Length: 326
Image 1 (cartoon, rainbow, N blue to C red):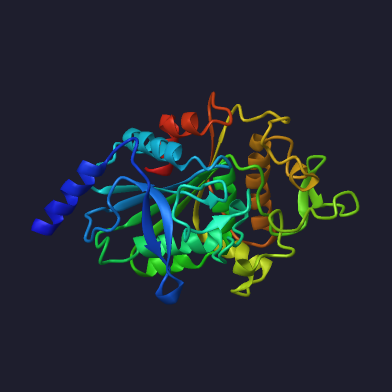
Image 2 (image 1 turned 90 degrees about the horizontal axis):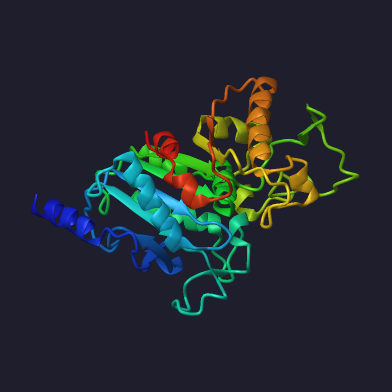
């Protein structure tokens, strides 16, 4: 009882909308490494009384501190008790981040969002595996029941691919922890076959006009090592993905085809002209593919009224809290 009270007080005392980053040790054995995160609790503590964890993945600006603030607003709107809810915002570093310990993994600019390996070899997907393993440690979090992994924009791209390829979901479920994925406003999605929406019909895309349209991260060609370590067919991957708890979100006004940081490659354009259209198209694709492959799929999709490509506005919207944290 004393330890539980101490943990509860620690969590309350460290809760802050402007929390400082901290280093958490991830991995195991000789492959352990430090990683920078923002969190509302000291992560070197044990037996924290949290029942739910929310992990916020930043966008291309890598502004993890701002995403921590976004998460704070999300938790407030959801009416969650700070003493039992852990908020964590990982920070994927590049060479531009000179003030952090030298042994923290760093990526070439923009590569972390693909799930790609860092300069030291650990991939962004492996980091998510290790963060979830950290949360699944019952000595640290004996009461944890649910994890929400949510990303916006570039972070949404990483979450969607991770939801397809990871096996951590199954390992967490075996310990009684449910994993939900929030995919918010990404520039592109990973498709399970060569069909794309063209002329209001789902049909095989012509590779002559866009030769790389089905390469990873848009399709299943030329997958990274992480995605091939467990040999599954496209249909098997789709069936597993259909069973996972995935929620899609996008702003109703995220509809600018000339948005500065939106992927405008031909591979992305085959998915739609805007982020909103690409998400609507992808959900319709899921449904159609589910019928073709006789796999029921029911991932909800929500458009947040009056919101453009703005993470703060999207996560501050009441419907977002209701959808992600029911």
